[in-house]
Length: 294
Image 1 (cartoon, helix red, strand yellow):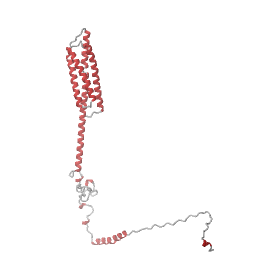
Image 2 (cartoon, one colour):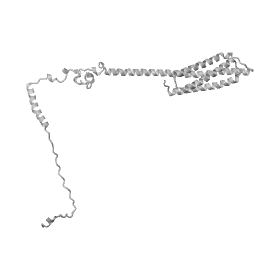
Image 3 (cartoon, helix red, strand yellow):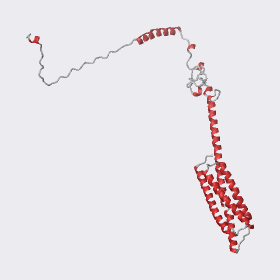
Image 4 (spheres, one colour):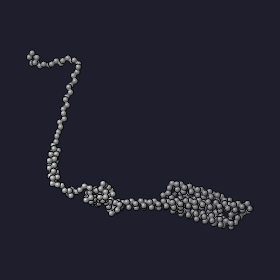
């Protein structure tokens, strides 16, 4: 399961707090055991040794979990193991603490031993409480992710179903909502017979142009204009039409075949402008024979 950045940060903070508390608890418990080892009873020594071992394993295990890749089942298994270890040790110590015997030379030493026992019994529940809180948060995140995944899968399935139904409805030739079965009656709508609600064509017969005369189905008997096959004319009208078509259309056709070409008119060339300045006339060069003629 892919975890978010927020959950990764919260997980790292929770594990860091538990590891720090375990180290502090190991340090304090080691000092107390070192100072009061001779005054403690044998069962109490055994319980304190088990608590030291449990907190050491907790710190090492959580540090390994921080370094490894996050996996739900791995965190759940390690948290369950830590809960069993800490709750079992703390519960057994609280159950057997009233029966502990102290070897003390003075009443002050016995009071100090009882204070150490009481403090150990109370503080031994801090680490399992933090582990239990993290386990509850992990269970909540997993449950929420599973609900979100279920909702997303349901939405995706509904979307695919709607798309499939729309596709089947569009390509199905027998669907009552497709254009393949839409029909109209021209007698009921003579002004707009080619509306989409009045069409009836077969797409399989004409895939490129569904609105073709072969595919459109209407009743010609109900049309507004009469059919040419049912129209009758008197003989005078027929003769007039033939003469008119013979006399008018042929010359028109003949005249349409003639091509005329238009020659553009030539524009007059404007005179060359002369200069108003008086200049000396250019002398003419005469040949030898022309000069001896005069």
